[in-house]
Each structure stands twice: as structure tokens, then as C-alpha cells.
Image (tube, rainbow, N blue to C red; front, top):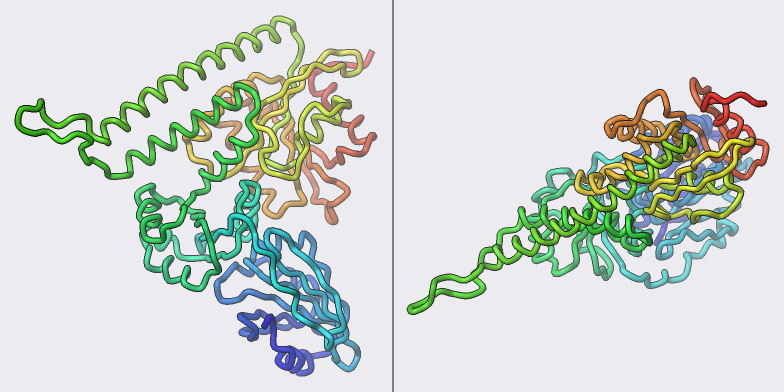
Length: 468
């Protein structure tokens, strides 16, 4: 049962007519109800409401139902199975209900008269059903991002839990306890900084595949890498992760036992693995150095040609590739709503009001990447740092865009970029309801021809050129 109809009706009837009633529901029972005098107060409460194992449904009742945007992000961030809005009349009698509910990795919607409401049909059986565990310290925006990361990597998050940071480091018993009430799952994802030894223990205890955030990122990189550079970055990240896992796992069984008449113990599994990893690392490092030399040669060529370079950077899925294509007026790189639509930097030469310019599209960044993965992109950072102008694209429709902006700015500065060359541009202007005043940069829409012309003129001026 999603909710008890009589219980919900009683709460609506007992509270003031013009108030907004919010109910937190767990397994059909209302465990908490609150009233608000305005949508502003309601949204402020929802903004601060943390994801919890204590409720799986939110119901909101009012004379005019408030509109919640980005429904899937909102539901993912609060770990909701159901979100319902109920409209009632002057007599506080419920008229209609609109219910959003999870079905595999999608959110579906039904609208019906309240008293004719029937629960949705049985959910689809998803591919790669997965249980996800988040730290209780995670923000709703961070949880929603992690769920999207899992889905982009090909997993369906069917069960989600928030647990204490301590439980995600060594609390296997608590995790096993929560797993007892899950549906049939094939994988577990731990979204926390956990050691490889803990993941190994959890895999043995559950007999399931246990993955980390880094595993998801590497998996997506593997699917997106096309050029040699991207594949080398992936290989570097994989080897670094394998080395970290090897350091944390305790193995030491001898592959060949020594005995009378023999020379002694042969190469242990630990020594064999260490040797293989060392050779892998040596090979990848050499190839990366060759790739870095090739890119360095291209950079020197561009410098000698005295043609300016403009880099387009930003958090993943912020709209970089869309702007890149719009400035070139061609589909030079893939546009997608998925994270890391491409990890191979692309550079194109185009004419800007009679002046030749190199335009560089880079891989999107994402927070909480391990140093091993970040280090694999040193050559990309060198490309960005050598640019004359860096356009930092920010999706200001996303919750927590300020933190994302700060994260990318910090990453750029730590990797040799000049602060004076970084300019923020705020994408998806048409979807922003309230535009905050900006001290630097401006809002734009990549599908608005006037905005693209405005950006081109802005680049022209920032490069120190004057119209002839």
C-alpha cells in the first residue's frame, strides 16, 4: 500500500483550508505531517529535508497543488519511491491526485480522481538491479548525482539507503541488516570513501558484486573512450585503481610450494600480481608520455602560428559540447544528457569575425574523483592551461551549482590555469526562473542565435581584438 486513504483524508480535513499539508509516508503509514502557509515555506522545508530510510513517499495536499520541477532529480535526491500532489476543494474534500512513481530507472506519472485512485501496476523488472548505500552526510543534490552516475553506467538503483559514515567504512553487519529487506539485487554500490579491503569483505559476505563511485566513472570512461588519448587515460586510471586495491588486499598464498630437493617457495600470488601491475604501469606510462609529447608538439605549433586557443570547460553535463557545436555551427562532438558524453578532447579551427581561432572541447569534470583518475587527465589540464581564454560553463538550473562552480575553479587553478583567463558562462537561460545577479559572466542559451553571437563578440573582445 502506497498510502492509507482514510489517514490522508483525516489530515487534510483537520488542517486549515488555505494551508499546504505535507505528509511523510513509510510503507503506507503517515509518520509525520506538517503545514505551511506558502509555497515558499514548503520549498524551503523540502530543500532542507534530508534523504532518510524512515520514509519512502511524500504527499502534498493543497487547494492548488504546488509544482515541483526536475521531478526525477528531486525523487532521487530524497530517495523516494512515490511523490504525490493532492488538490482539494473549499470543503477540504480531495478531488484529484497526481502520483509520480519509480519504474526501473524511469519516473512515471498517473493522474486520477482521489477516491478512484488505484495503485500502479507491478513494476518492471530492471536490468542490473542494484542496492546503493549513501553516507548520511550526503546532500540531496549529491545523492541524485550519484544515482544518475549509476544509471549512466548501466545499473538500475532499485533499493537505496543512507547510513552513517562509520558503517560505510567497517559496518558490514549494518549493511547486511538493511539488505535483508531488499528485492532481488545483483550488485551493491558504496558511495563513500571505502578501502578495497572493506569492499572485498563485503563481497565475500554478500556474494554480490560491490562497486565504488570510481568503478562507475571508469566504466563510463570505458564506454565513451574513442581516440587513443581517451583510451590511454582510461588505462592509466584502471592501473592506478588496481594498484590501490592491491595495496589494501591481503594475499600471500604461495603459487608453488617449496619442499625437499626444490629451490624453495616459488613466486607467490602477491609477487606475481605486483610484477604484472608494475609492467602494466610501465607500459601505460610510456604510452602516456608519448601522447603528452604529441600534444605538446601540437601546442607549440599553435603558439608559433599565433592563433589564439579558447577552451570550453565545466562540470559534466553542464552544456559544454552544445556550446562547442553552436560556436562552430556544426555537430563536431556528441551532445548528450549523460555524464561524460565524451572523454576525448576535441580541437577545431574556426573563423571568428575574420580571425582564426582554435576551439577546444574538454572532458567534463565531476567531484569526488580519486587522485588516480584525476592524474590520468594531466595532459588535458595542460591543454586547458595553455589556452588564451577559458570559458567555464555552469548549468545554473542544477541544485548546488555554486559548489560545482567552486569545485571546477579550484581544479583549474590547482592545475596551472590563470585565474584571469577563466570566465563563467551560465547555460540554459530559458529554463532559469530566477536569475541571480552576476559579478562576472552572463546567462545564455546555446539554441538562441543572438546569444551565440553575443558570446562570439565577447570572445573577440576578451582576446584583445578590435573590429575593423
